[in-house]
Structure formats: structure tokens, C-alpha cells
Image 1 (cartoon, one colour):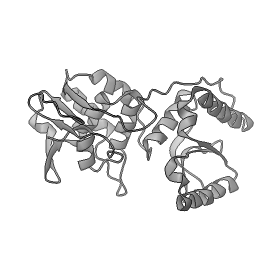
Image 2 (cartoon, rainbow, N blue to C red; image 1 turned 120 degrees about the vertical axis):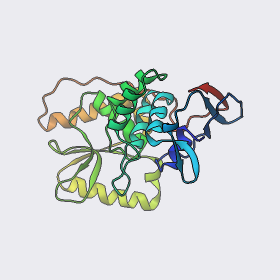
Image 3 (spheres, rainbow, N blue to C red; image 1 turned 90 degrees about the vertical axis):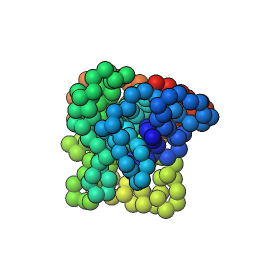
Length: 255
């Protein structure tokens, strides 16, 4: 039975690649580089997905929420509830909440409940989730995911339409020559319409002094545009590592 990120990949959830195989067995085994989970697994939690037995989409999201590390768990859930190109998500926040109500007593449910309070569907990558968490935790909740730029067909990773500020995460993918050219064209259109653009990288998010500078830059741009809110805090970002992929050698745990 595939579970965790292995099940997520079968359900078409993005960023499932790069994780070690994860399976459920009725009794514990030890296999190098394979995560093995055991325990009771209700029949309703099992589906046939692409000809393979896997946990249902909602159970998969719930499991990722309770097994991934803190903010990475939030990012994992956001990928599970992210609509695909056809506007269809593997599951929803409401379905996960209903699953929790209908399955009391499961291990680490409290963590998933906490994570759901910060889940905002819309992030197109885990690092966009981490960017939003830093921005919102600093107190800048006016920034929306996939914010449309008026008068264009463009969206920005995070944006405040009222203050005309766009925040874009700049990852390695964006540094490829073709993608970078497309990004430059997008950024010029955004700034040409009177918006200011703030770029952020993984280093700026994970390094505390750089994160403080990032938050201060957002505050400065907001103040220039008339924002009179309270001074922001520099929030924590809780990641297992700076990469999205966790590394495991041998794992055997109870579900």
C-alpha cells in the first residue's frame, strides 16, 4: 500500500518527486531508504489509483500534515489542496477537517489542526508557501497568493493590490535562460504598471539576518504607500532543512 509522498505522486500532487518510497505494511519491516508505516488502516482510506493500492487523497494529505516537519507540513497540505490546470484539487481543507472529525484519536491530529489554520490554497510551489508564511507572520496579511495585476493577464506570487506591491520567489528554476527571459518580461510589465517588485530567494527566507532585511524592505515599501500599521516582527520559519526533500535511511514507525 503506497502512502505519504508515494501516494501523493499517484494522486497527481505536485512536488511528490524526490522523496523516499513510502509504504504501509500490516507489520513492521526494515528496508534501507524506504519509509515503512504500520498500524490500523481503515478500508475507506484505501483507493485504487492508477492500478496501485494507495491511501485516499484526503488521508494522504492528513498523513503528510502529521508526518512532515512543521512548515514543510503546511507546504505539503497546500500542494494537496492546490487546483490543477483543470481547476481540480486532490482534496480540500474542508475535506481534511471533516476527516479529522470523523476519525478521532489518530496520532498527531493536533498538529494537523494547527497547520490547517495557516493553509492558504494558491501557492504553486513549497517555497512560495514559505514566502507567504514569512510575510503573513510578519503581520503583512494584506498580501494575497496569486494576486492578479489589474489590466493584465498576469498574477504575482504574493501581492497587495491596494499598495501595488508584488513579491516574487526567485528559485533555481527561474534562472534558466528561457524562463529568466520570460520572468524579465513579466517583471517589466508589472513595474511598468506602477507596481514595485520585491524578489526573494531561499537564502533570504532561511537566513535570519536576510529574512529581517526582507521584512524591513516590505515594511519600507508599505510605509511609502501610506500604510500606518504596527512595526512588524521578524518571524521564524521552521524547516527540517533548506531543501524540500527530506533524507531518510531506514524508517519504521507506527501510523
